[in-house]
Length: 274
Image (cartoon, rainbow, N blue to C red; front, top):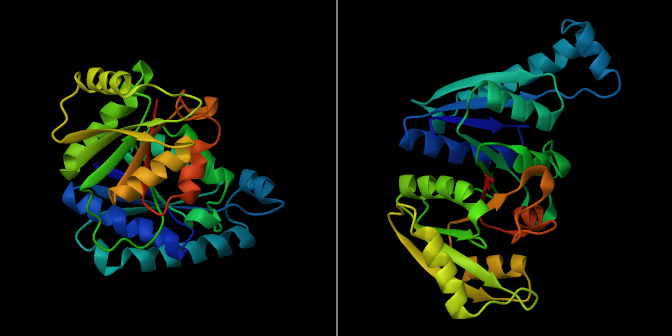
């Protein structure tokens, strides 16, 4: 986590994400890339194609520069290397492009939680970043204060394809000194015996060097409720899950589980691409 990308629309929730990113960067001797996307209505694409020096573009760009510079002067960023980028591009595409160009290790974004995204990075933009990012995406829902990850829930079906994202989750957990709580959610439509579920988890985790972990089997009427209720039951600091990108979510994470969790969970959520 040496390079951390923070998209900002200058909302309170974006700043909550920046404060968390600052703590992560400080602990890992990392740097922050602060990104603001300028999406101008109507003639924006034509204006962009003909140059960035027209009055309207310069007005918005200068206003954004001033706000970024104010952010960069924040006390909580003192001593951390911070660079700023202003991009004339559609939000989610720009976030992914800047992420690739700068070889970032982590994207941190803020959201409004259960009410959905209501600032610049709302709805489809945030969901597209989560689904398409090749690097982990950490979603912050509220002001965290001290961002410590002691209890990290990773819910999965523990199939072979989950090993790639799980390796990233293990790296994340080990860096924070967290205990990984590996949980399989049993639902009426996809029920497995305790013995079968436990054997699946044990066999899966045996190939990894996890510093601290516990295994759990949790019964619930559906997967989303199972993850949220289990996380609440242990007072988890973070919920992790794997995403399938454009194809949706792996077996276990069907339909809109990823965006439902991002919207409904009050705890931070981190996603890892399969």
